[in-house]
Length: 102
Image 1 (cartoon, one colour):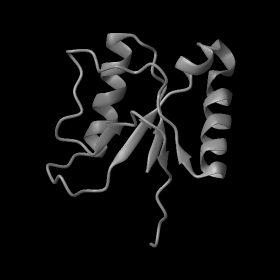
Image 2 (cartoon, rainbow, N blue to C red):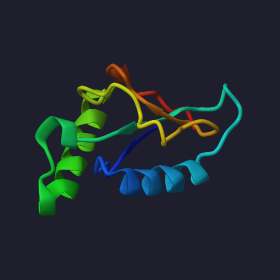
Image 3 (cartoon, one colour):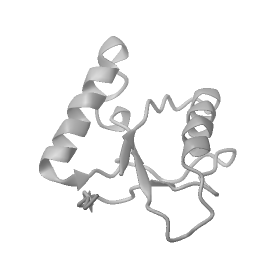
Image 4 (cartoon, rainbow, N blue to C red):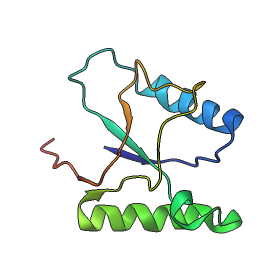
């Protein structure tokens, strides 16, 4: 699974976004299905009023090509942010889009 995030690179905004996503995708089970997070802004910058459209196009192309795209230049989360206890992950390299059977 994949979620294209808003990802403002603001600690306040990003912590709120991750908290909301994490609350809905909690799991202590290491075998639970993973949901990858993506963001178009590292690729093209913040496009202001059309940022949602850019994210939509990126996600549609990712699905079309069957790839969960890595976030270019991603190193690590801010020390005050955590994905622990959730199914959320950052794709550090391009991954195949999982095939669903359900």
